[in-house]
Image 1 (spheres, helix red, strand yellow):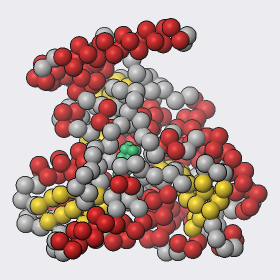
Image 2 (cartoon, protein in one colour; image 1 turned 30 degrees about the vertical axis):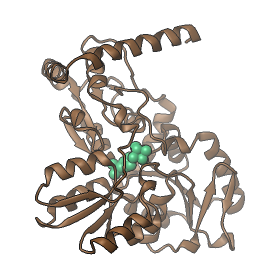
Image 3 (cartoon, protein in one colour; image 1 turned 90 degrees about the horizontal axis):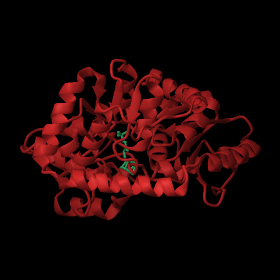
Length: 370
Ligand code: 13P
Ligand code: SF4
């Protein structure tokens, strides 16, 4: 697309969105209901737990990234999958569904800063260095919070994807296959998981993708896990101070955090687990118990509403929602549904066949192990 067409299209989209933003909420909601009814089973709306309430109320299923991947793979009835989550999740849905099914992301700006921290070029450079250092002893694993290209790389080299809810299973499988593993792109999930499985911190190195350098003090032959130096800009905001403040002021309050939190935070928490684990723990907790949760704010607020009999706060009192997840809102959802109902091409996420073929090897390995 030339620059002029691109700018015109951008301007047009911005103008179009302004008209949606000007509509009253009730009108937007009624229109979403109408289109959902009109399209019936031809339309499938998966929604990640971090989505806003105004969006999640319309989701046919809500789930964590593993559940959304599994359910997308199972759905063969829908022609249109309007994915309420972030870009890498929509890519995964596209790769796990049939060619005829179209996956649409209501706002193309809904990315994931962590997924953007590992590019294919950087990964190739890292891999060459690791080959020189360790020969054929490294198994690559990638958190699903990564681009399709990275999943493709991992699939091509015999590895698998992981999510926060199956990380232990997949990492222990990988450690049985090869002497060491490269874990992309979230150092914290990698470190927390490997440590829980008995790998000591002295057996973990960090790959610095900015400097193309392995950060490790000691004999390289002792390295079992190489952690990519990526992180989640939301979960990194939970600090040791947050934990210590709660411990000092309210020693009876349980602390539960997502494994994307830093190692020092995870070590000091009472419970560490995926989005699904956090939801299940809070749901099953006794009435009257108090909880500080270290995860995304839309989810924490929803849990507060759903469990008025429990005292729930965010582990960090100044926490914000995941801004890129929040790009998907009611006006963007409706704009994409209008496009779908008129069969107009709009924000389709389509991964090329070669990448899909390799990435599916990594995804399917994970789905089998889950
Ligand atoms: P889950 O795998 O727990 O759904 O997490 C996805 C995510 O983006 C967490 O930040
Ligand atoms: Fe990415 Fe973090 Fe947002 Fe999850 S919470 S989508 S990892 S930026």
